[in-house]
Length: 295
Image (tube, rainbow, N blue to C red; front, side, top):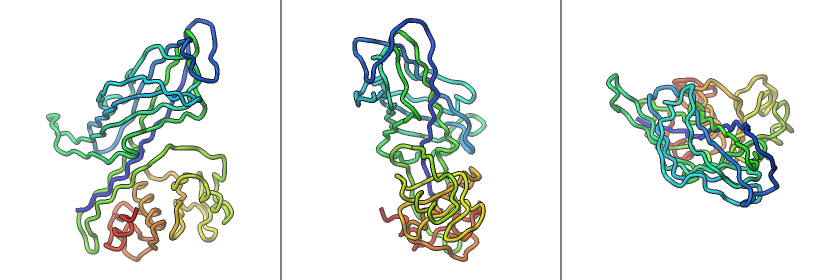
């Protein structure tokens, strides 16, 4: 049996403010002016698991001047799947007023458990964490803690899009391949090209920072063809995909990453590198496995 785990920690931030009091905030954290902050976490669902234990060891606010303010120094563990349609307070208190551009979480462990009817753990998956567990949340624009006012920040952990586990049994030509694809660095946005309609659009996308570019539509990949779901150079350092069936996105990303590692399509209906994507196309041969394992 081979197991390929794709781990991408996906978070979104929702900001709101309320409360009385006067005063404003300058361009950096001002130790003499304080405001209230409440950090809230929520989550949706994830298929195939009944428990998702997230262990966080520290939370830090990073000001636009680079100054770091500790929000939490004590480790805690919470079950994200217990937060379906509800929220839980991570931390609250008074912190220096100012403009903040980032929230940093130090994640020690994510444990995904399958439970039986009695609530006992029958199987556990512990994905490898990217960047040694450092997760930087970058809002689209900086948020402000204002003097004597209350700011609420909600962290939405999208587990269904964060963790994809592909697990298949052995088959002809399928070799054990302990490969994990993990995201390192932050998730950013870009204004264009959101539609890939030409060689120039593809070249522009491949020049953007990061290896994976998610766009709205791909109509060109070596030539014009409408509604392509992924395209990557062979070999290369960048791949372009659209959002796809959540159950198949892990296979799609692994397929396009295979192109980046120099692998072409092959005529095996069960292969990850088959010309099209499918739920049963999860087999990896020895040559592909060796390519995936090259840093």
